[in-house]
Length: 328
Image 1 (tube, rainbow, N blue to C red):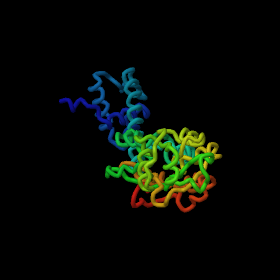
Image 2: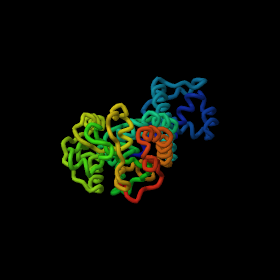
Image 3: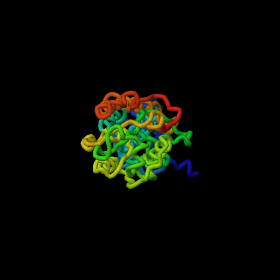
Image 4: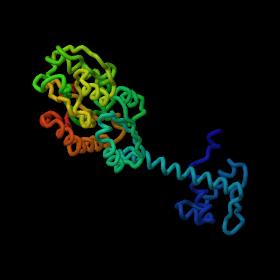
């Protein structure tokens, strides 16, 4: 029968023990089995290999050339099996040997380096991917990522657990050359200046549409861009006005001189970042990494945001409870 020709894992353990002990008795004592069981295991392997593996008459026992090959492979199999079981056990507790994390660009730029260093304390093997929210969301759903830090909570996917991280307000931007500070409102600017915005197909673009509806304006779009840096440079050049989030702007303080920044109406002006992972697969690892993200944001990133925009003191914040509405 085919099953009778399968190599038993226990037989490999016994064979390696014999090779290392150089006696059947020593191998039996080491493994806590009878000498008869050791002999049967060796015979089974020799039957399957169709050759002699052990020179039994020699004292101490020597392996034949075929036995040396068997020993090399058996040791590798046993080592790989131990590693497999260890990886499975650590995965069950959340201490993964390798973790693949996706992070939207704005948070990666603000906190990526420190985040990687902190997560390395949880798992030494870390793979990090950065990019836009929508393609990263697809990668998570396709199981190409273990964890995703994003502005899209993917609420239609109950198989995911969601950990809220922070509230990131939108801010109005316009060049000082275009208007006075007290004129920097969506109502006035939409009537006099063209709008510079994130591309409509992006997550930030969709949130921009939502914010504009909530403030009650339909601005005329001049440029659609997928880069915050390019958006701010275009505003700085006096080509129109825009909205961007505080987290995005905090990465480009060098471009904000000569630009008015103003808050939007409360309740209509924020995106929320969250951490997503598949339920019941990573133990408490998502919870631990979410706590690290909040700490880094609160203790470092938020301080940089408030240096540029101190009037966001009560609007930009780390959170650990889901908002009633994920955009607002």
